[in-house]
Amino acid sequence: MFLRQGFVALLAICPVSAAWAVPATEEGAARLRGVFQTYFGGTAGVVSVTPQGESYELKIDPAPLLAQIPAEQAQISISALTYRLTDNGDGSWGVSEDQVLSWSVVVPKTFEQKGSTRIESTGIWDESLMSFREQQAVMTDYVIDSVQYAPPLPPPAPEAGAASEPMPEEPQVVSRDHQRTARMEMSLSGAAGKAGGVDQAMRFTAEGLEQTQDIVMIPGGEPVQIRVTAPGYDGSGQITGARTEGVLSLLAWFVAHPSEELIKGSQEALRDRVSAAMPLWDELSMDAALRDLRVGTPLGEFGLASARLMVGMSGVTADGRLQEQVALAGLSVPEGVLPSWVAPILPQEVTLDFTASEFDLAAPAKMLIEAVDLAAEDPFAKLDPEQVQAALLPQGKAALTLAPSQIKGDGYRIDYRADVAAGPGAVPSGSALISATGLDKVEAALAAAPPDEAGQPLMMLRMARAMAKPGASGENVWDIQMPEGGGPVTVNGQPMGPATSQP
Image (cartoon, rainbow, N blue to C red; front, side, top):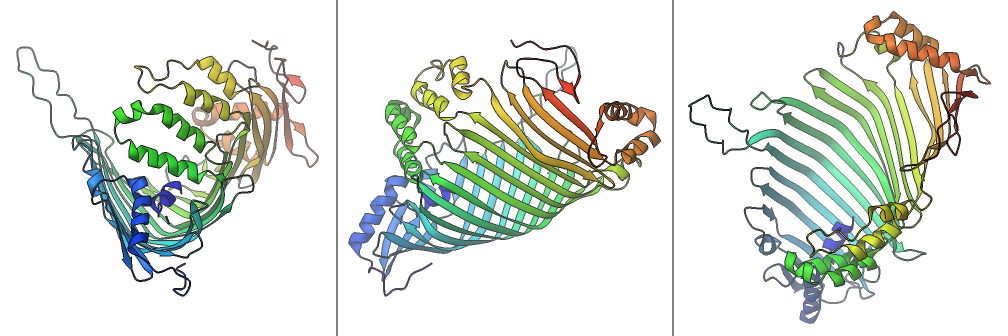
């Protein structure tokens, strides 16, 4: 998100009516050129701005910049991009594009990639926000082809008295990957954040997903083909307090210091730029759902009716937080892959809702910014790992929460939740609650299986059921307690082992 916004003005600046537009002038073009050269440098041929009636044509050609990369390190090409900018006269700019973006990357004997897509977008860039107020974009026929290489294999050891064979010069292909998305759409809105920065909301969809991978499992062997398809996915994202100005300022600083020597020589200024960009954002979340995933393999086709993923995280703040939710449903497995006794108890729905909190990201980040010396042989020599750990976990532990989640199959269901405090060198404390119904069916399936395949799981299940207590609706319940200070872990009040002492 930041990279795309940075590329626009980074695009600086829904098409607006020409009646409200400020006519384009040579002076305006010069000002825009100066803005973009802040972010892309003054290399000749990279940025050009031309007045065209009520708008400006902005052209960005990365080729002169990419040509500065040593060919032995990488060869990168990106097609020149053209945008139409319209000055709305109120500190905002209409930005539009309709073009094909293509690129290629070659890291010699390591990696190759080619890609292309058609992009059509319109939006309003707000100079005061350093962000889009609104934007809509459509990408069609998004295609990426990649090749991954492994280092050349050493020759076999020569027999006694025989001359050794030279090392093969050509790298070995590890995988070939083809990806295509027929269509992607995105809409974004932005406004000034109540507590600073920019608040942004985004919605996105994708249609017609396909991926084919040829993977070489054994050097010199035949590739194994994996084919993945899905009708599409959709989702939304929110970010509050995004520090767009600080991030774009940091990007401009790196453009102005393109070499390792320049960066090392100006690292005090770099500290200031990085500090100004903190905490990057206040809160960020992304929620996406994928439907009817199909994975074709030499063993047959695996399937997943739906998959949903939600990730939320704080910025580099003192009240750090990370949350992840996963929900999977409708798992299907090719016939013959699993033993026949597994099929009746294969889970059909799985949910997980995990949160980590009570850790501090701001304090260790400040220590890192202040202590790192890029000019030293060991840039991190001034950092004390114990002090960093103490800053990260001021209470010595983080809070780990498992919100009510479940595993559900045909005729059975297992629910679980937990609240635990844990950290390096500290005895975990807290509680967990597990309940289950329909375990008779699971036990029967295990009992019918060959003992060498299911004997141990059957024994563990029977032991667990013997320790369970009945719930209000007849379910099996396990109430697990981990006392603070290192007392014995108990299940339904029964100690599970000797007491553990606090280190």
